[in-house]
Image 1 (cartoon, rainbow, N blue to C red):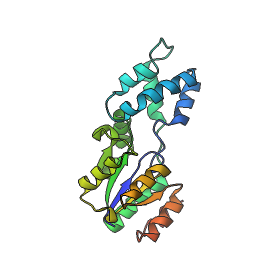
Image 2 (image 1 turned 90 degrees about the horizontal axis):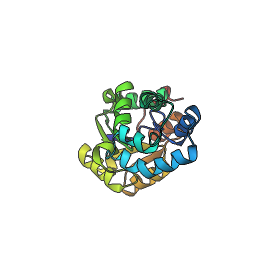
Image 3 (image 1 turned 120 degrees about the horizontal axis):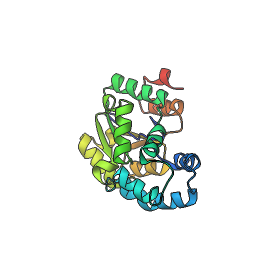
Image 4 (image 1 turned 30 degrees about the vertical axis):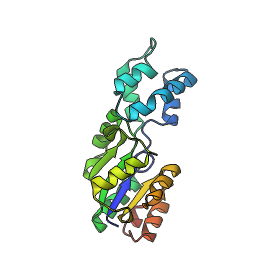
Length: 206
């Protein structure tokens, strides 16, 4: 194993803008959740592939009508949903150091949220490259995003292990011959990685 492919949301950080965060937003801002969710689902694919800016997304999904709150306040709420998963951040850092792994993010994220998360949680210090949907214009579960990550990492599938909390994406990566871990918690992920020969992070798991 030379390379670790890694999802961000649900693995090293909380999900950035999932249905739980949107439901919280609907409650805090007194938005009709059903309409909000319907508009989000119509827009999220182009949002996450970098074809809509955050401001354009908000114009379509939230500010298509007059609101009692500002875009700036809503943006702050969106960004505040991101929280670190310290055990997984520590596990990845230790495995990278012990095994000299190349770490590549393969994730579905919108550009402004992705940039905020990278900057706020220091991910650039931990990760060698970001194959984010907003940068490459491809979203998981498209196999092409994994092929692109392999090309950019210059790694064969047999040299890569991939961690994701979405089981479907794990299954897609596995079709290419990438050893894949369905992440549930840091302890079980550390144990699975150890079974692949990637020891060294167990003391940080919990």
